[in-house]
Length: 161
Length: 104
View 1: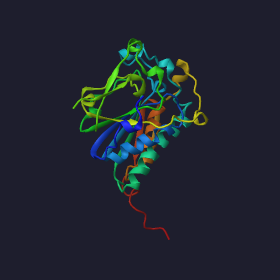
View 2: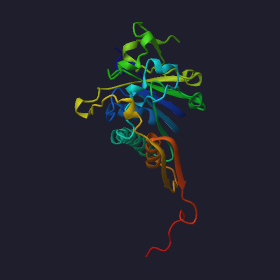
View 3: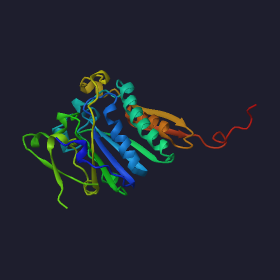
View 4: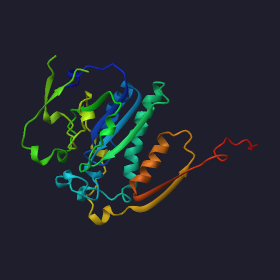
């Protein structure tokens, strides 16, 4: 497993960036605090945080992905109001606090929820310069791995940015 | 410059195919610290299709949204979260949106 030392700090600033992460459980995502802090610090103007979870799966079959991630894994929307609001608030507060501490009071921060059976729209990448992903920590959601590639061993190239 | 390779188990796996515009972006991998403590976890149960339908077909909300901040975005997101068909957002206009000058 890679250690934090394998990933040099990236002092480089970009104007617009995406942060992609999964939520293995529906709870206050305290484990994301350092990740949100890093992404917010490295971004000047606009940061879009996209949180993926099977709990956000759409009710109706929305795409071919629904075969592997059925809507039955989703949660009641009205019944989960409190915890979903807590997750949303926690992420917004973490990012906004870091931005304001750095004097970036007008930084545009958005938090989006996406299910595993939902397509990601191409327009989300327009104007973006960098995407932040997470590695390590052992928080991963086993359900997040597509069924047809679970038996395979894969490698990811790691950028030096 | 040759990249370093990480085994699959240490990268946050996202099952949704990333659009081309996103997959072509430079990627910065942020190492995660300790996993969240067990105490902070609120267990959730998978819902039945009947539960999922617990949304409201039409929801209405309103505000001045001047200027739009994180609190507004949370409110708008939560309204969308519980709405299945139509979300009506009323925006307060003049003169209510103007700063009040008649306070003592």
